[in-house]
Length: 117
Length: 112
Image (cartoon, rainbow over all chains, first blue to last red; front, side, top):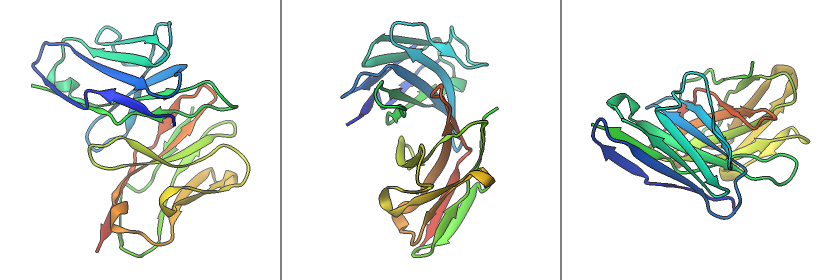
């Protein structure tokens, strides 16, 4: 149980285009979803937290207009990288937490590799 | 502010040798602590977690970790390393807002 999927697993796009990444909780309802970014050989950095039906909360330094997050249902969140540039190339990982028990850990997706040419 | 420190960026051990990966955290209350493993180009796999109770936690793949409040540490151990354990290991601390703070990671290399 508690499986999170991401689609696509990798994407290559041209500079200036927009790319959408989907994050789905397959067997549970995700109260909250998180989006992380990981540069090569570095750690995961939290970009934003989204609750279903609410606006996402972005971490300091993350451009809201660049990284659009939508959490329209309890099983789906999307991250859209708008007007992508080569510096946006990175590994994007989502996670989701449910709403059961006394503490709800995050379950991580397999990640999406974005390469912007 | 919360923080996680993994002092060792790289560790190399011989196959069959014991392993200890260090993790120190800074958090004002009782933390929720995690160890994850990541193979190249892959997502995170949870090895073990500590929420409360017994301070020695058993995980998957023969890993264990011990929570030491006095030392603010949560070190990961394995008595005998296998070549397939070569990967990046991340320690994370979580607050009651459910945000995770990750350490910088330790890259493990296993010599045959």
